[in-house]
Image (tube, rainbow over all chains, first blue to last red; front, side, top):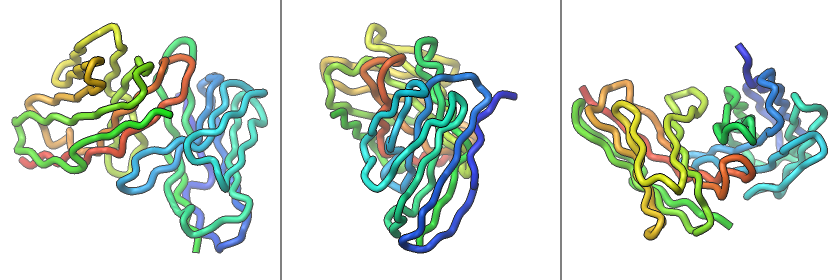
Length: 113
Length: 113
């Protein structure tokens, strides 16, 4: 089955470390997103990309950067992790012109000590 | 930018009763309103969506209503079952195909047998 895969699924790191979360998809979708989930805050959009040459900031992009290496790959980086970036991170894809439905990966739980 | 408020944050019902979750949005240009369900430990998945040219949409036991004048939309679940227990997120965007999705803060629904 075509899917959205995130690595790592769980990561514990220390303040100040650089962290990369990776997302790859076999759905053939052009559009990819990174969301952050915190209890009581819902899903907040960090960055999104509508094609390989397109990168856009979302609601909470400060402290994060992204790279769209290929149509199927979209990575999220925390250059210098801080404790309040402890959260569950979701990558998602959509077909764009065909449907607005988001297809989420299984999530990457990040803990910054 | 768009802001989506969702109420209540938690909702407990008896099996067989109805459940209603309400959302309000701020951007009058929004015209796409999906609902996502997230079961415990799982990824969010789309359950139903509605566009601004439609006032109501039904799919078996779930329905969504939209009041564009008041800028609010609601999810209705009838004859609730224990498997309906999950966190439900509403969302809004200007267009299903071209814009980013902004989510509400989520409602944790518990259905007791």
